[in-house]
Length: 474
Image (tube, rainbow, N blue to C red; front, side, top):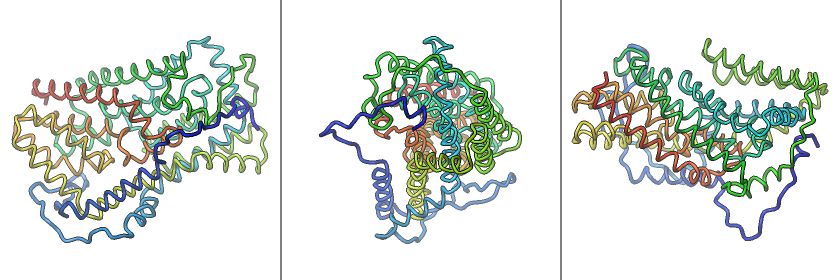
């Protein structure tokens, strides 16, 4: 048993406690509902074309009904396998990063670091919450930080729990921080960049207003999470996951403040920080994605083990232990993708989009702008990819915006808020569901916790879109 494991004592589950269905049960139910919907919604499709920039976009006015096979009895079961295939890159990224962090956890350096930080801040560790969230928000706004948050949850969750916070806080710092920055992004190439390109606007134009919106939107989100974290730090029993945290991770014992970082600990932490810096540089400067990140994390895990004087077999054992801890979080991705595969194979996504497009055309301009936002919010449940949703919807929303008198910048703003806010709500968002599973938070508890923030974000986004329309923002 390592030092980190010695800081907890397990609490047994109370008898007769009503449990929310397992996340696999929830997601498989959604898969079955998606299969059923192929009998309730007509199959249809828009024609696609390739733009000058090489993007596949829909052709406005080209919707037509199509013949396709309905889901059969085997479809929901095959969807899980096909979902695993579709999400394989993310799944294996989670496995590799989880294994690498398992080696880091096995060194025992985390407890020493937490003790040092707690002692240095002398009870002011709450400042870590807004600072970390601000960093994640910048990542979301500039290079579309999303799937990458999983790795940070793996490492931050045990550290924040040792500092006296709960699993919701551990999940919220990366997810809400990056999500808020992503939603109100001012230069995210995967949402703002793609949408503006399709709308034939200068890339990253309108940045001044977007930056102002980003400050307000991110500030409100950080304030919400920080207030909650401070409340739980003061009174842990008020946490929605108080009992589940203790069943899963045990009861934290008071931290010892006399633990100092040894030379070996400092080398281990240097390897970790170096890996984060290298990944950040690679993502921003060279467009790295999951493959390169996985390679760096694997190298980090080996270096950490060497610096901690572990043998090769010991490193491998801790790597496997790390994979075991996050296995459910990785497999959740496959179930989430399974929902989308059933909807896509049933050819009903375009039908839903066509019906929503028809509803928007008969509204006043200001209501159309808000309705565009709400439609994008709904469609993100079906198409949780930012660039994919832009390619699907913006060719339809741009001419509609021109027709009713909504500026194209406002249409892009409606898209990015609609795409971003629900990323950390919808169960079809693979990285989000994986992040919750890794942190040990059930989807039902998360929804109950985030509902006030989600309503606040919806109101803020609606107000910002309305203001942009009134200003004729172009």
